[in-house]
Image (cartoon, rainbow, N blue to C red; front, side, top):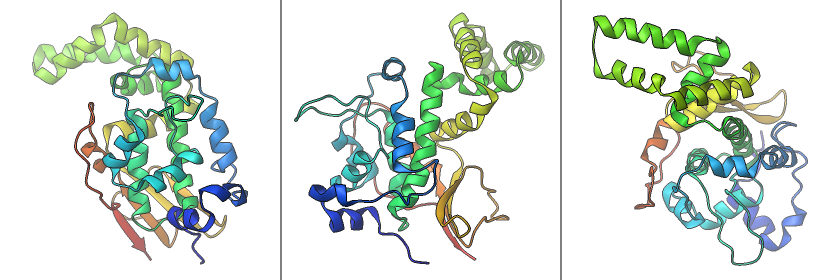
Length: 282
């Protein structure tokens, strides 16, 4: 198998002034092609996106430091939609800003790149992550409501039944964790956000919500593999953790736990560069 050039190789080959020479028509597949991915990401409501944000906005230099990549690499990712700014102000010299979701995506891509994955493979990872972010932002809900939203979509009425169960258990076995959940579930604004989001989304969105939950909680793994049948890189969102099933001879397992090292608020010291969770050749 001939591996496509890495993102740095692509930059060196074409250069920033000859970007139009790049032909990405052969991209991963219809779902993850550059044009499709950019269209998917661009379709979200910018006002909805901004309304869910906090003051935790970062510059491109912050993101570069956080994830440990070169600025030229980040430029390639940004130009082709792998990373999406909060807004795109017109005019030269206007600074782009990025939220913590994009910092997490950049960290995943940096770990994948450190395993030698090509730009095509990074696109196969970035596209579903960006779609998952877009789906969650459409809900206009806080991240701490995400688990309850998923349950409510899968089983309408679960919010109330879970609250009743928590109360019964807490009456017999009092503990701080259950009391915290009860207090949260009883808040009118929390209940409203869960029910409104569940009504706005559907069961078809659940896979994206689970992927977003993994991203923000920094838990689990992503597996990217080369499909000989489709001649493309693919993302397996829920790989088995014991290595019992590998979808292809070449698989890269990305540990989302490394995202926990990213800053949670104000920009801080640079994060160390880390590799991916594992590389399997069978």
